[in-house]
Length: 330
Image (cartoon, one colour):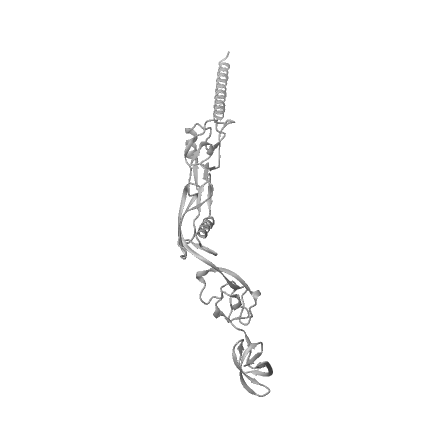
């Protein structure tokens, strides 16, 4: 074998060794990759994270955060939020919990989280007001009335496993006075999980006549123009009209708005006679009644005494306005 052939043979052997080493390294790398994927591949029974959890208990369990837990692996993690409140458990905390309790779960990103909400029931301010009104009625507060308790009556939030009920635990009220103090308890007085101390003023309500629509001076008010409005008795002044008959047949002295209590000074009797009108003059003489044509020298509403002239005798008279363009001389 020549030197050239020997050299060629060496080169071929070296090449084959290099190729075999590369192939072996590639196969080892692929093997490691498959092992890594196998070890990190989630199993069919891997736990899944819940996005939200509604807790009706004072504590949070593992099962509130994860699904598909192995039987008997549930555990108490800590206190739940207050009724109606929420708390957020982030990815870092979730990873620690999963590691501590050997849960087959790892976060996909730092954005993984669970929003835990404590189930609750709310007793509204309307419910509280209604039960107070009923208790005051039992104490002798008669008629329609409303309660003023500070700016607003607060609501009460209870845990979801408690009944949404409330009772008046104590009430102080003296007949004839318009103030009260009370303590309400939820869900009841025997089990006062939450209590609320309240004090306020009793507002008696009275219906007053108001206009259905705004009327201006000259518009005559009829029965169909009137409706009733409940208002606080405290707001009714000495000159507030409370009798609809005092409004019928009258006219506003100026514009009167709809739906607002009317003051007596805002109403006047309509002008039945204008100055210069031709009028009918009635004369009463016992059982005999005489009439004559006349002329009004002054304007007047019903009941006003104005000066008129008898056109037949040209005599000036004082007469009371008793109707539309009609006066009466006594």
